[in-house]
Length: 439
Image (cartoon, rainbow, N blue to C red):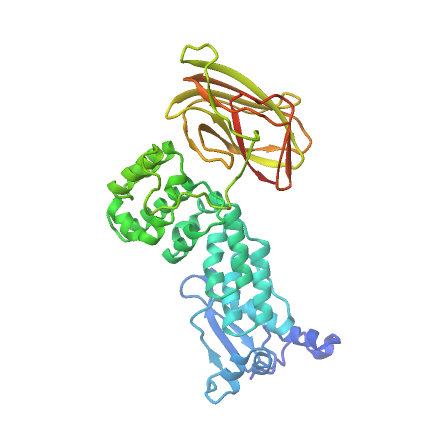
């Protein structure tokens, strides 16, 4: 036992009015200490060790684990403890909390402190750790936090992690931590109905995870090997039928994760030969973008104003929204399996351009709650922010075969809390639907 007789800061030199002040004074103090913890110091190299002096009574009245360690039937007989599962910075913060109800958490130590809080049964410290993690949670670290939150059965933190993943799946799956998650967590991810991510982006992330697993296990990075590593539960929960046909052809086929029969059947589904793709869901996840049509009904006809079998059409749309939205994509009318040269521009009322693009698009089958049609999906990357109560102009020019069109355009359309007001006649125009999310 150290009496600390040589200490310059002794009881008599400063008044400490509360028990908390007196206990805080004893933190990391040799005075009256009767046990020491010898732990690795990560800042000092692999062989470096540091000692933390402590007091059995203070530890024991704070933690039932320390009580059993020092005063239970199988109490430690030595006054020097060498725990093998922690390092100096995290154990020091555990003791700081025990002695003072204070803790200095940061991104580097919080997981280690949470582990120790669970091990030594200090729920109030665990709560501070999970609060810290929740407040600092984002797409870049969520796949680092979630596995530990599940291990420690921190349900509230787990729920927050899934909220971030549902909301920011694209960004989260591009983080370094994503490729390190366990297969069981990957299975949970692809099964989520509320996941807000383009299905092709989910597939890319899954393929990246499989490639990394092949590399870690020194296996050939081949389609059949990746399929075996992923397992049927993962593959079956990727919704290939909701992808655009071009996405499927350009991204999925080359990865060779699907069997030739599966790929063949999905291509037949895209082209209307098979009514249902066997083994894969064909409905979008509920967490995806909301869509809104500009029409009360989709009464289709072919638009060929010149009667020449070719179309050069330029049309515009003017609108405003009552709530700020993220505009993810615009859907235009096309016709079955045809290609179009599309030029699309979006500007605000001051003619500040938010987007301007020209590209070749293939018309694909589109599902709508008012009828299905063949159309063109123009994606904005990044998404466009349309501010509430501001007018925006959309101009679309299509070159190619005749397109379908719809009648009965509306002056406004409501969807949940959003109202879109249209200030131009949309009947017969190329615009079909908007894909958006409320900000």
